[in-house]
Length: 317
Ligand code: 13P
Ligand code: SF4
Image (cartoon, rainbow, N blue to C red; front, side, top):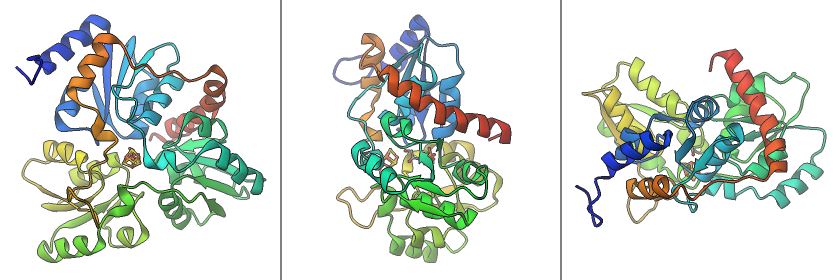
């Protein structure tokens, strides 16, 4: 039995899932208990693919709002629930539609490649969407003469420029978790664990990316730890992923990188961590809060998302 209401959330959520033909999709940055009760745990691309193809009537999204919106756009006939509507994203917040429209007017003639970490309104203004696991592939799929705008993450954008050599203008946005990792702490951890490998998400700043043994999306990082033979990894992304890393690699050690400055000394995403088992239970029971996107935005945002999904499918991503 669990906490104040004396409800066993694990059993109750499982009961409600069956009763309502619901599934829980969880991002790797969720807490371990939520990952364990989810029907699917993945990165942004995997979650979008799962949202687009499943037999459920209800999707409970254990993640942040832009992810739940993307699920709704891909499965408009389903009820999509987000257990806490305040689960936003500092990166998505850094790109407001009014400012982005002006940016597009000031830089016409470029293909607009937008990271999935944006509102539906920004997606509706884009030519094609990408995630951290397919950004390089998506840009490489565009004809070489096409000039590009990449938004909103300047670090992922910079990583894509380095990998593709393309003519890309960047929107100046960042994720407050990934831009804060302490290079000093990483170097100290490496000095203390000489055989450890440094694994880094591409949303991190260039100095952190420069010391990486491997750079990849959360799924990419997880798969790397499974095929690589090191015993210890210094992990520069939100530490929720370490739950899966330990499950998939019993016996290996995973050291989360702290931020430069934070009161808790941890690098958790405060938005992701707004979702709790208790909120999932109430949300599934009451079937709210529900994600709704206007029909017009939904239609416009769907096209660039589908374009990304088709390219990813073709490339087997
Ligand atoms: P991925 O899920 O593509 O690894 O991105 C991480 C992230 O920041 C999600 O908010
Ligand atoms: Fe947004 Fe960063 Fe949190 Fe991901 S980790 S949801 S990019 S604030």
